[in-house]
Length: 116
Image (cartoon, one colour):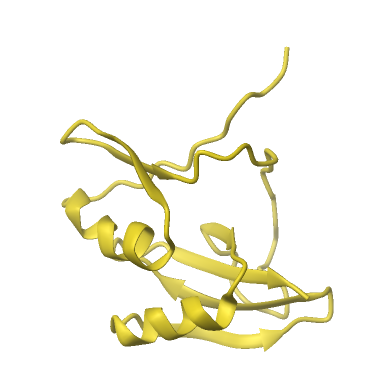
């Protein structure tokens, strides 16, 4: 037996609000839209990971989702331009990442990071 995929499911009253955050800013493709569920993704094969944590590191709360990007400053600027409030960072962490926390339109705490 092998795990083939892990999908994060986020409950939302209006899935259309996800488009700006996940598609327009983060650049994910709309892979499926059934009206009651929309799935965004890259279409690329990614490693499967589940992290279990007592804190988010550096004394922060545990984020709901971590998203690694290739241009942290670009995503940070786009989040600010779109009016999303940055809740932590950006900061260089001692374990080798630069990151910030932001809430998606549904209140989920998202850890946006790049490995340095």
